[in-house]
Amino acid sequence: MTLLTVLDNPAIRAVIDLSLTAADVPDATIALDAFQGQGEARVLARFPDAASLTGDDAVQIRTAAICFVAALVAESLPRVLTEFVGRRSYGATKAAATADMLSIAAGLRGRGEAALASIVSEPVPRVRPISFSIARGGRGR
Image (cartoon, rainbow, N blue to C red; front, side):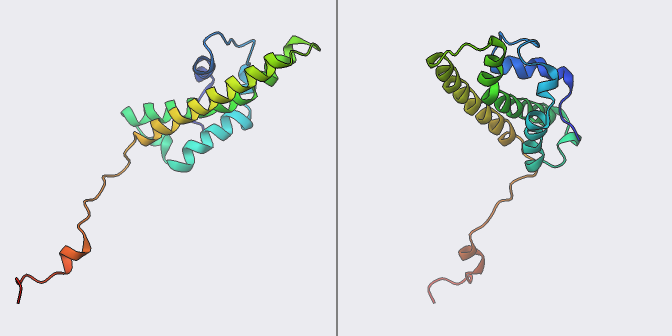
């Protein structure tokens, strides 16, 4: 069961970096199981019925899936982008870009978790402490 379609790929690229294009991160790369499959699996692990949710809950599920997939893509993005540059080594620039993408990925995972936390699938029951439910009704006898 897929939560995202190819139409969500521009959003995935945009939450990583607004300047990313389909030439930088192709749709086929995003659709790999290592990215889209694992990102959606993280959402489905917490909400197995995610595809059947509607309204605001469906929007939050989609947002969480986009963020989780984008986080996985962002972690590998410096390696993917340097592959297109050629054989030149950029040393510190690549290390800085990697550290920056790792912090972006952590932020995206946090946004995904926040989106999932905003979904209330069942009402929270009011729990009465046991000590009040066992006590007898008499006073000081």
